[in-house]
Length: 183
Image (cartoon, rainbow, N blue to C red; front, side, top):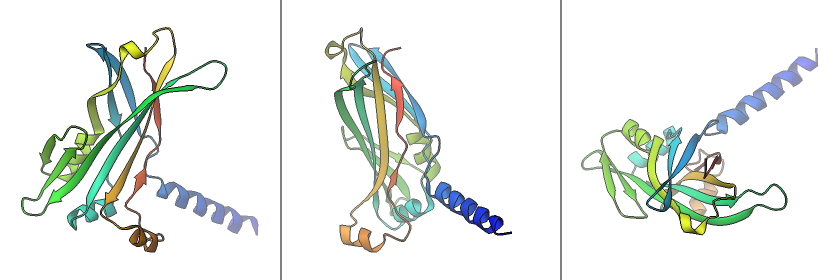
């Protein structure tokens, strides 16, 4: 009789833990060489949470960042970092036009989209991200690309973030994904 409440409590805790995770299966990536440079295409399971959509509607800007690391995977010893780079975007809603403006913060290009579904579709497949010049790499080695991504709200002071610790958070960290640089 006492086992059932313990099991129920354990199951409730487990489901609460799962419900706070943003994405279980985040995505996949692949790399290719073009004109002496390695590029990557990334497919993501990108979906904004309800509180992030509300934050955009209230005038906040969201920052989406992809952090790439190129690592020499060794059979023995410690793996060696070859290099890293970041690809950053801002997402904001233009209150006058009702359109979402996505800005690539690395190169300054802008895209205007009609709906939140189009924004999610835009970030679900990102192509032609330059990673590294092929002259830096040794073709005989085993390289992997590790990508970590996250969404954060811009323009919120740290003390407000601290006050809202127990409330819904606008920041999301995603699972890291890894793929082979050379196939």
